[in-house]
Image (tube, helix red, strand yellow):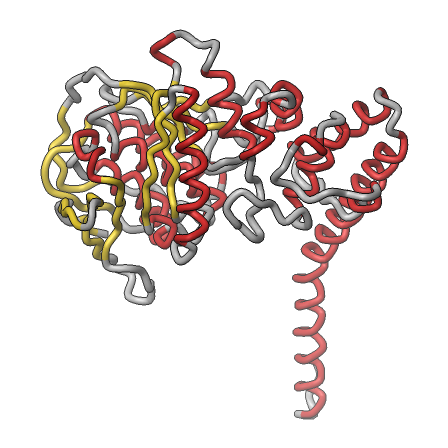
Amino acid sequence: MRIHAPDITSASGSITLSARVSVETAATRLPDTLWFSLPERYEAMIARGTEPFVVALRPLASILNEDITIEGCFSERLSHGLEEYTRVFNAWAPQKFNPIRLVGAELVPDEPTSGHAAAAFSGGVDSFFTQFMARSRPPSFRSKYAVFVHGLDIPLDRRDVFDSAAAQYQETFEALGIECIPMRSNVRAFVPDWELGHGASLGAVALLLARGLNRFLVPSSMSYTTLRAWGSHPMVDALLSTDQLQIIHDGAYYSRFDKLRLMKDWDVLHDLVRVCYEKPDALRNCGQCAKCRRTMMMLESLGVLKEFKTFPRVRTPFHYLSCHFNSPHERFNGRQIIATAENSGRRDLAWAGRFAMQRSVVDDTLKRVRKFWRPLRRGIRMRVARRVTLARAGLTS
């Protein structure tokens, strides 16, 4: 894989940093160019190097087993961190991620720069929690910017949805002394496995703004007690740092239920939280997908769901019977929901939680059985077919 020299262009009030990408694997269908676009007023913050592109494309190159070739200077510290970053993913999924090299780069130490802290922002519980906790942190760790990227969870063709959400976030954050930076990128088109590759995309966004930042907070998805192989992880996020920019995995001490419990009375969250990934629609959550139901169940157990304007109303706890608690982190949250519902006298909700948890365990067991049985069934079919073929030929096995 070759990443060509980045090019910066300006048009219609936006500035775009892009780089052509050449892939050796002929069967791979990808866009010709990886790009990031944001309003012109942030031009001074944009780094001109290849670091954002190398980080964003590292998972793809590792999956394709192609070394990355670039020309010019590259961060010495980041180069070292990327080697370990790739080793971690190779250890997690050796059948998918291959060790690769960075070729042709002149490694140079970074010059530390002054800047501000920023945080990735999606509108979900985790990203709001980072902003919530920042208020009590030392000044240099309080995020001045919330970076909201169109193309990560909201599809690029839903410009109306993104613009509507961004406008409301900007208005609210301005009152809190935080500046919301709207950005657009097609980076997701270059990530074959989003679960394991999204962390690199967030790292690329951070490095793109390295001329104006000194710290970048990546909100945690899981807690320390329920960690598993995942694209954004306390083990790997910091490896994408340079001497200019420190990348920090933030909030992993808390489960998602803990975060909601701490923020349940925060008016900002009541009006703006957006967790839905099935039907992303500005600041409205569908209330039907797995993530919506789990979040609503947490809020219901805390007695504050009615305060959250971005969720539909729920008439009975039967709505939660189809909740899915599949991962260790989700089941940990489920146990917290049940315990809190019991303590608050909501036995109906606790019963619905237990039913949903047991249903999830049964579904997970059936999936494991099917996965185990599939190769055995295939082997049996092959042996039967072989015996039939031999019998028709008048032979015996």
